[in-house]
Length: 199
Image (tube, rainbow, N blue to C red):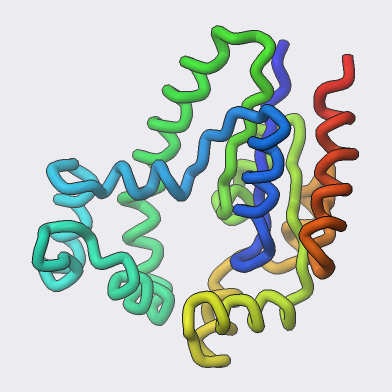
């Protein structure tokens, strides 16, 4: 039976980079972040539910979701974040399951699900392989501030809204440290890929 593999890590830990590196080596990705965009695209019941809960102010003039605006709202309010998760997560899970089932027909495919919140949602135990991309909180804050132009307090609030580093590491079957260069990370991904694809 094919192993169920999930890739996760805290915000700004380097998940996307590792996902890209795995894809370059032949992995087929099912990315929860991309699916989360699909389930709240214009015309979906997911977007209707978000607007129902948060109001039309979370929409851009073209009718798409203002993700940055909604993000600022929910990261400042745990109850609002829980409401958003209750709308988005079940829809993402159902879509991911459908995509994974469609890919399962190719027994040679190494399917990697990219789920940033797999620990937070209590689903790490659903997987045979849990790959955690790990960076220390100071590195995450610095990356987040540079990438998203957030203040120090905003960046730390986003980190605090996720599982702790210790919780993620406790769920890991494989840890990829990512405090160095992309080349160093690529070497670690090479070793992991050999392990995942060895008979």
